[in-house]
Length: 267
Length: 252
Image 1 (cartoon, each protein chain N blue to C red):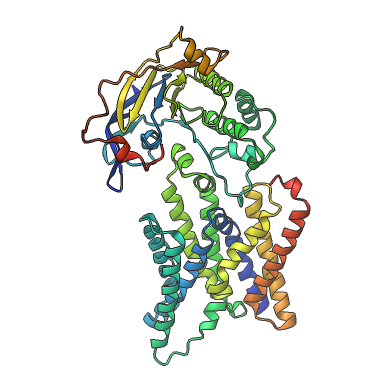
Image 2 (image 1 turned 60 degrees about the vertical axis):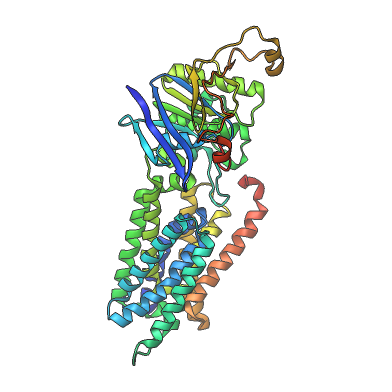
């Protein structure tokens, strides 16, 4: 079964959707959309470092994504505006990454693969790493769900209930770094943020509660992965962008349907 | 045995002294009202007692296992987050349907459990915040400007509700208000702060004061009392803690 590259690609995509669904909801609720973007961009620097130091690309991207996320937290905590901080760090990391890659001797690095991903080239080992990474993130979010949700709603309410908002923020930061490292190979740095945000945004149009929204985001992400791969197979389109295109179409449909039933949504 | 105690607590934001020399404690079943003008640091005091803001000097001690029912002044729920009332009441700990219905009835709300938080009126929203705080069976209720935006009968009925709740649960109540003169008549103590504790004591009920009656109206059911400030120092001389100058940029 796993000998079929389409089967491996679909399973890998579904595994990523399982993690990006609920994580994407938190990214939307906390208005961290560009945080995901910035972390993903920084991952390119991780790819360059990994290639330069001959270490696993998963490890390289993960370390850079984590460092990046922590730097953002620290700088934002010192009073820098979040969008400015993200802008400086994300573009710098991407540029440093691209420059660093050009220094790598005699290595023909196909950067497009890391910018846009290459889901059809997922190996059995890749699939195992992706599945493990997604399971880790999903487990982390399920375990901390109630605390994460309370801290997202209000840090003061969380404090009063004995929850440390800083710790929950760290949980999300780590989860985001893991997802970026894991998903980089599939949808690529530029499209990770899309897979985080678009399914969650589409789910918001009809979900009645936070749990329903997270679940719907997983389902929508799964449909996008499956539909995108089918589209890619049938029309010979690039697979990563095809997945995002399908997700975007679902968002469009759910927004149209949402505005038709707006009164019932109580918004 | 106090539930929360502060000794010599001071809080500074970026070198700006917001609170200093605060000694405070509250015991089980006590109702304490903190009053102070805007920018006097009363919200900062509440946040320091909650543990949100670490004190820069002194220390805050909370009783082990203290259950705090916190009712914030405002709560912004991101429009991207769908939040039914029933789900909100279950944060962070699950509450049973019956317990939720009880809590909602207790705060005078009907069957709003299935509504979305964003569809509630300001009055309903605040009662839901209180219901959520009560569901945690708190040892202490902490209310941040609970009567802001309420008209005078609304203030009176809210204070009566708090009194009833205190009697039923036996919890302490710490409430802060920017209204210097009208406080809960059930308050055991009123603490007036402006950076530091200016004065404190039992609320003095002015019985025969027609001008205050005219100002605050009749029919409050005895829920409102006038607190007479007994400052033992003047603020018009040039000493080192010029309140307005130092604290004005911080909203209370």
